[in-house]
Structures are given as structure tokens and as C-alpha cells.
Image (cartoon, rainbow, N blue to C red; front, side):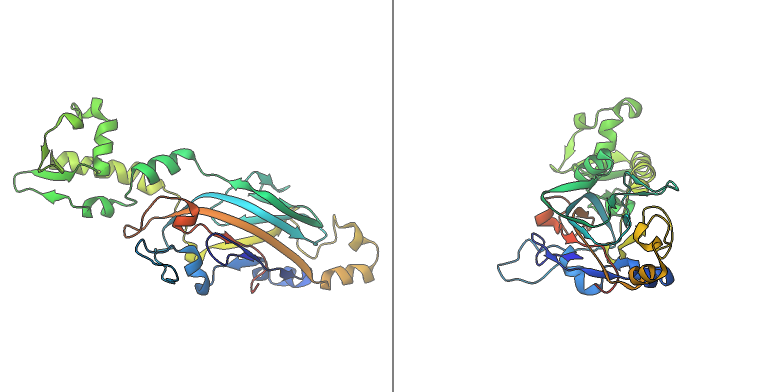
Length: 291
């Protein structure tokens, strides 16, 4: 299992996997983010100074925008699928299951350049994260919108509502940037127009965002052939005789995966975009629990 010393570097730890134990207790094949690791995934405040240990960011609302493998090691005698939460991949099981990473038996590889195993829909990354700085209807309605007394609402010029009106100017009958700007920072809009834009954002953007809760994030290991961990099928060495099969069932197998994540913490109190190093991109590691 690989964990970072800082958001920019990683430390490799190997986790032990016993096939017999994995067959009896699937939980040992899962790695969960312990609360002691939360600071690894959070980011430094903008006003932090060298040596400052403070971290911030709500990990319950995160969008993963990329994942790469930095190293893979396994001495398990069968191929393994690695399944991180919120990641769909192109490695398929015989039963049709999918995973972003497939590890062949007795693999020992450290990659000079991280190998990408997951990239989400580009429209999600570009439109909703970069342009739509809000991630919920409440964010939009709480962002300095001023309700007027005569059926109008004053909307900040950088509100996502303005983007909706820009992209739908043919339907609404006016071009938002032709409207006068009040006090240099607001557009004066009809209440019904604002409500309609908020409904559109909620239905077509916010409800479709692939949010991930990193505070409860899980990475699971499974046999690529879909069989139980102690099944000797497809494991030639275990089929030779009972003594050898028993040895491999009770043998300590070591699995290590260096996983580098790039993600956005969708917290209105934290910057929503930036590089992995700035936003808390971290190398994580799937393996047996307790590693």
C-alpha cells in the first residue's frame, strides 16, 4: 500500500493478503481511508506558511478528475482487479465486471511516468468544475444574490446563472451581456428567470455530478476471473497436490499499488480548481485492510 509523506511524494507500504483469510472474510481485501489520513487528502490554506500543518476542505464532496498508477507489485498467483470507488475502468472480468486496473501474477513494476487508469467525462471536468464554481443549488442561491421587492433579483455577474443565460440566449430572448450592470457587479433579472435557471442547473448539472466521499473512500481487490480467493481453478501451482495448495492458501502474499489521485474539493470555503499539488492530490494505495 502506498501512502504519501506529503501531497507531492509517496511512501510505499506492502499489505499482506492471505487467500484463505480473504475467502472467509472479504473485508480484508478492502482499504478504507482512516480518519488519521484525512489531512493527506485535504489542502493547505492559502495563507499557510512553511511548517504550517493546517489542512482544510470537506472531503464528503469531492470530484475525482484523474487517477494514475505509479507502481504495481503483487506475488499473488492469480490476476487481481483493483476497484476504487467512483472509478470505472476498461479491465473486464469474465462475468463482465469492470475495474480501472488489472494486475497479473508476480508483477513487479515501478513506472517512470505515472500511467493513467481513470479520466472522467471531460465535460464534467471542464464545465462543472471550471465554469460552474457552485456544486449545489444552495451554493448558487447563497452567493450574494439579492432579492428585490418588485419581482426582480440582483444576480452577481460571475454567477452560474449568467452562464446558463449566455448559453440559452436564443431561448430566453435576450443576450445577458447586453443587459445593464447595476453597481458594477449585478444583473437585474426577473424572479421567474432566476428560478428557471436554478432549476436547470440543479437538474442538468448538480444532480449529475460524480461526487465522491473521500472520507469513506474504499479500494477493493478481487480475482480477475471472478472466483473465490481459495478456489484452485486457474492457479496451476495449487492444482498439483493438496500440500502445495495448502501452502499457497496460507502463504502471505504481498500487494502494493501506488495510486496518484487528482481531484477537486467542492467546498465553497476552499479553492475549487488547481493542480494536484495545490488542491491536495495525493498518492493513495489499495491493499488489505490494516496496511
